[in-house]
Length: 581
Image (cartoon, rainbow, N blue to C red; front, side, top):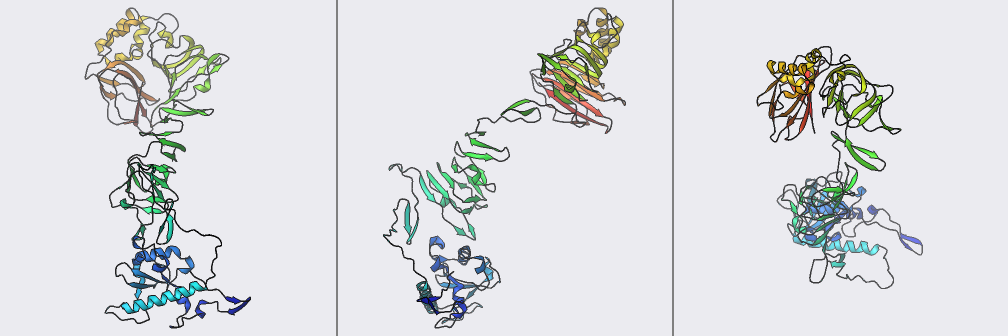
C-alpha cells in the first residue's frame, strides 16, 4: 500500500499534511484515503490474472489481492477493481463485511460516481463511457502518486535483458526460464518451474502442467490435486524437486520418478501409486532410520531389512551390533506356559546351571547344552517342563516339583545327577528309567513297571485295553525296549481322551481326533499336552470346542509339533497354543 510522505524543501516542510483523509481529489473532493483503500489488481498485478494476464474473475481478484495485503489493511470497505474476464469490462466490488472475507457474496458490485447509469437490477452498471473516464482518471491518479515517491537511482551500467537460457522476459518481467529436453543438442533433462494456478480459491496442480518426459519439475508453491479427478501421471524419467513447495490430496502415479530432496516430501494426504526411481531416499519415522528403494523393497543404509517379530524372535544389542535370538516368553493364564531358552553360562570353564536361570513357575525350559548343576543344587518351580533338546544335566541334585521331563532324543538326560521331589512323567527310554522317575532304589521289578505303564508309556492311553495289557506284559516280561511294540502311526479317525497332566507322545500321524478333555483336578494346575510328527500330507486334527487358541490350528507337512492346553480353575476356561520346529 502506498504511503504519503511530507514534502520538504531546504529542510523545511512545505506541505505538512500527513493524514490521508486531509488530502482530497481535485475534481470529486473524495479523500485520498478512499483511493488508497481501492486496489486495481489488473494494474498492480498485470501477470497474475487468468492465463497469467491482467483479466480476472472476482474469486481470483480477491485471492491475489488478499495475498499481498497486510492484516491491518484487510478491513471492511476495501474496494477491488479489475478487468473482468467474463464481461471484458472494468468492474468494482466493495467488501461489505467488517472483516476480510474470501466469499464472493460478501463483495458488492458498485457503479462509479462519475457518469454512472442505473440498471434494471439492484446493482448499478457502468456505461462504457463511464468505464473509460474512470479508468483514465484512475491512471492519472496513480501516476501522480508514483511521481511523489522518492526515485531510486542506480549508478553504472544496468542490463535487464534476459539471457534466455537461465532467465526469460515475460510482459517485461524477468522470470526463471523453463528448458525442454533435447537429446540432439545434449541438453540434459528438461526443466520446468511450476507456476501458480489459482482455480476456485485453490492452487491446483493439473496434468497439463506436468506433461513432458525427461524433465525436472521444480515445485515452489503449495499445490492441491483434485480428489475427484483422474490420477496425476508423472511422465517417464522425470524428477519432482521440492523447493519449499508441497503437494496434497488426490492421487499421483509416480511411474519411476525421482523425488528430491527425499520421498517424504510427497506428504501423507496424497495417495501414491507406482514406484519411485531406484535409489530414492526416505526416512522411516516409525523405525527411526533412513531407507533406500531397491526396486522391490525399502532397505536400510546397511542393506539389511531383518527385523525380529518379537514373538518368536527378539533383537538384542551386543555393543554396536544388533543380533536376533529366540525370544523367551513369560507365563500367561490366557496364552499358556512361558518358554525360556537356557543360554550358555561359562564360569571357570564350566557351563554352570544356576538357580536364577530356572526361577519361573509354569514355564517350559529348553535345554540345548550340557550343564553342570550348581553345588547347592537346583529347585524346579511348580508346573514346569524340562524339555531336553540335545543337552543334559550332570553333577549335583535336581529337586523337582510336579515336573514334566521331556527328552527329545529319548536318552536319559538326568543319568549323571541325583533327583528328588515329584514328577509328572517322562518320555525317556533307558535302562535307568525307574531311577529317572524316583522309583525305589534297586532293580526294577515287574510290579514297578506294571504300575507305571499308563503314566510312563502315555502312548498306551490311545490303545485299546487289550493293547494296554500287551504293553504291560512286554514291560514286565523282559526289557524296556519292548515297550515300543505298539503302532507309531495312528489310523485315520483315531480318537483320544486327553487326561490332565499326562504327556502324550505320538509318532507320525495322518489324522487325529481329540474326543474330549478329562476332568480337571481341583487342587493343581491342569495341563493337557501332546506331541506328534506330520508326514508328506498335512494331517487332519480335530479338537473339542470351547478352547481359546493363540493362533489357528494349521499344521504343515514334515514338521514336529508340541500342543499344550491349559485349564484355568479361576475362569473355568481352556487356553491352547502349539509350537513347531
